Amino acid sequence: MSRTLRVLGTAGAVGAVLLGTAATASAQPILTPQPGGVIKIESPAGEWWKCSLYSAQEPFLVGAPPVVTYPDPSPRWAPPADQQGTGGFSTPPAYAQFNPGQDVVADCVSQYLPIIYVQQLKAGQ
Image (cartoon, rainbow, N blue to C red; front, side):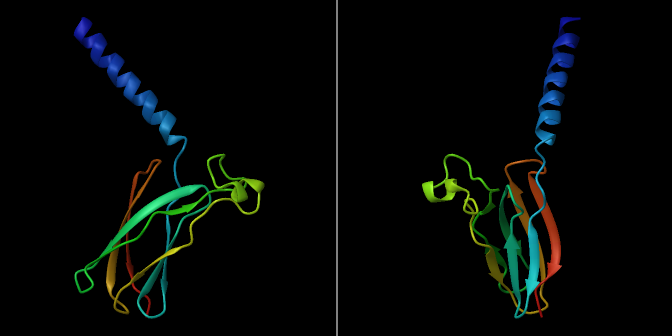
């Protein structure tokens, strides 16, 4: 009996954590093909994403830096100039270079659920 209660208690606690985390779900990263085989990677407001892009042709792998776009006003840990409500702390979009028309798979991670986001797209013509 006590083993069953421990299992149910553990399952309930895990479920509560997952339900609480799901409330902070992240919006997907914005991957936009650009001319010349470039893929632009942006993050929606309030989100953080780090992406790696893969292909079966050269170049095989491109890792993008974290792309962060926090809403205005910025969190208190942001640089002082960004705490003034002048657009909020953010990073510029990241870019990945592939051959034009190349099939690419983007594998991105975030701090919220869904933690992993995968998308297949073609590099810009």
